[in-house]
Length: 338
Image (cartoon, rainbow, N blue to C red; front, side, top):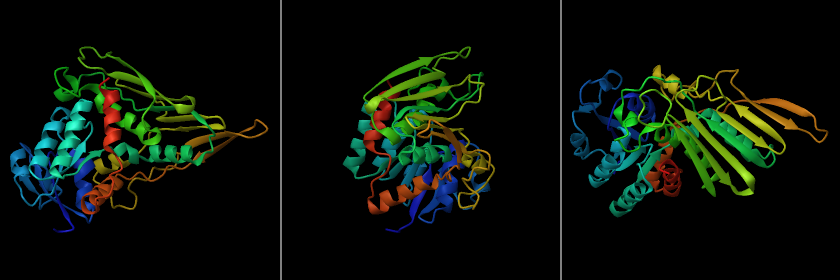
C-alpha cells in the first residue's frame, strides 16, 4: 500500500473548496484524486488533474480511493459515511456526525466491524483564538477558573436557501447542530463531559421553522460554569472567548483568519497562513497580592487546520489515536439532541 492516501471529496461547495481540498492538495501524505460535482464543474479550475464524478456512487466505486471526505448536507452525513465504509473507505466526516447519540453509536460500531476509521472534522479546535484561550487556561495564571463564555454569532435575518439547515423536517437542522457543534466541541475539548447542563433555544427570525438562538449552561466540578451562546440575530460584536478565574480574566475576540485566507485562494502551506494581524491580541488582566490590576496583551497563536489532516494521516497509516474521540462525539450529540 502506498504511503500516500488517495482521497476523494463528496462535494465541492464552500466546505470542499475552502476547508478540505487545499489541505489534501498541499499535504504530502495525501493525493486529491476526485470530487463529486453534480452540475457545475469548478474543482478543475484550481486542481486541473482532478476527476469530477457526476454521482456519489462513482466516487465510492473508485477502487484507488482510500479516504472519503463526507462534506455533504447534515441530513446525509450518517448515510454517506456508512456507505463509504461499506465500500471499503476510511471516512473524514464533517460535523455534526449525526442527529442522535444512537446514530453515533451505529457509526462507530460500523467502523469497528469493517476495520475502518471514521474521524470527525472539528476544525474550530485549531482556530487561533481557541488555541490562545486554551494556552491561557492551561498556564494556571488565572487561578481557579469558574466561568467560561464562548460565543459564535451571526446576523442573518433572512431564511437561508439550504433546506437541510432551515427545514424542521430535516434531521440535525438549525443553529444548534450547525454552530452549536463547534462550541460544544470546544468546551468538551477543554473540560470533558459536564456533570449536568441546561439548554435554551429560541426562534426569532420571521418565518423560521428551526431554532436560530441557543444557550447552553454546562456545569463542571469545582463550580466551573461554561456558557455557550449563538444567535442569527446578534448585531453586536461580542468577544468570542471570555474566561474568569480567581486571579484574573482573559478576553479574546473571534478573529481567526484561516477561512478568509482560504476563500481568497491562499494555500495552507503559505508562510502567512493562519497568522492574525496585529491588533487582534487577547487581553489578560491579572490581580496581584496588593489587589492591583495588571493588563497584558496575549498574541494569538497560529491557527492551523493542517493539524486535522496530519492527525488523519497518522490515524490511517500508523493507527494513532485520533484527537476527536468517539466518546467526545457522543457527549456532543447528547447535548445537541437534548
